Image (cartoon, rainbow, N blue to C red; front, side):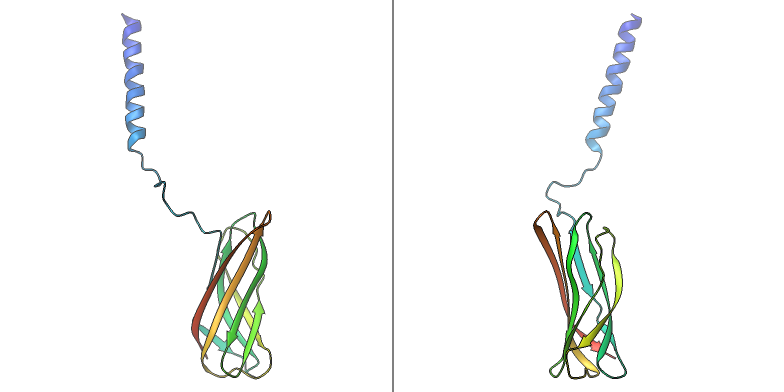
Length: 139
């Protein structure tokens, strides 16, 4: 009789555990996978005193164990354009950089400009990329 009570108690524990596990929330199977790379450029930048440089913040991230092949920002206006790189490393965490963009020739001017950020990563011959483009204000 004692054996039957233990068996009944054990069965009750198993049934309770199964019932509990059936109501534990799980991620939907169609949930979008976490992006392996992202980049976002700020909407305001600081113009250097000579107009040859622009300082702009960029926030980017990439997953471990990927490797960064390229990470840069471009800024253009009708009379000027330039580019600057930033030292992103794939840590899995978001990182913010103050990027200096240097003009290829003529000076930047205060006002509207087109800014773009681009990141390219690689792992085992496979690549992923992210990009962002904004009309920004040069102040």
